[in-house]
Image: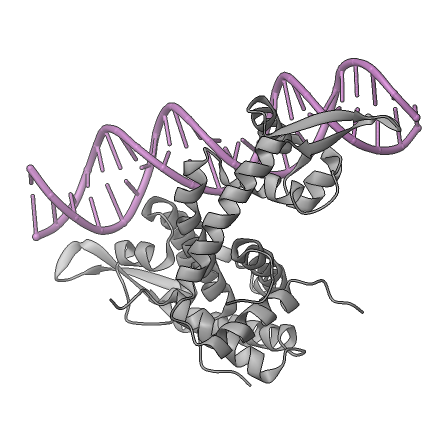
Length: 141
Length: 141
DNA sequence: TATTGTTATACTCTATAACTATA
DNA sequence: TATAGTTATAGAGTATAACAATA
């Protein structure tokens, strides 16, 4: 069935920590904390959500999301505007500067990932990436 | 270089959470918290360490390790005995009951992993597992 | 009445610094 | 003096509940 290996939890935990460690200096360059990056990355990957929707997209509690949004808005990386169709909602959108910072982070992270995967056999890497994507997609059922 | 996919941090985070969620009921059956399991799993994978070494093996701070060891020792899953060659050290060892509980968890987790990976192409799965192992091994250099 | 965004409170987890016993 | 284990204290992170505005 499987090669003899440690448990998935062990392996995934170690690898995620290694990846996060390598991302830290990239985020530091842009004065972003990990949650800040998760938030702007989510904003750069689809239509502008409400804060509630953004909480769901990022997995961050809506009450703790606010602090991050306050900071990012103050720095001019995003804006919050009332939804005309339901004024309880606030629509969150990346500014041009926010998009620029996001693009910079993404470039650095993509380069870091290439370096991390450089020594991996091309076929293994393809299987690794396809499996990762497949397992993180909710079961179709 | 790579298939078009979300960033590794995003994918690994999602998958790790999914795996942990599936492990929770297995650990619950044995009245273990995640850290308890990490600890007894580390104890079951090599020679009996000191508490300090165990902290390094598990990544848990040595001061917070103590609470877990207290509980696990009280339940008879492990024992702490002074090291005769240096009585400042306490050697941590799984008891027979501890080994039994560990074996039960491992069996449940292995079955859960098989279920999780059931629909993955065999070649992709092999590449996935080999890459995971390779990337979690510290660079040889 | 219900919901979004917000704030405040309490709780948990974590990090740091002391304390003891051994070396 | 230095280290392993332990305990206590302070700080950060998290969850819960309340509040104002809008529906």
